[in-house]
Image (cartoon, rainbow, N blue to C red; front, side):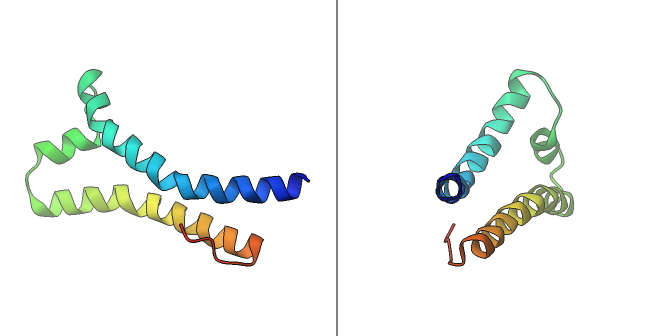
Length: 85
């Protein structure tokens, strides 16, 4: 029973993980301003050079994208069918 429950929970969690990460990244700037932290979004807004913006955005995007793809591949191998995320 735990095997079936875990498989269903993992599919639903991986499906909603994109929305959760998008919400967290959307609120990141607000949290940085609210707590007066100089983080990545403040860095992105303070330097207007395209190369710096591109590299910083890439360094933020690639680990998140890689994590989501690894979860998708892991679910495909675990379930034996495609779970479209």
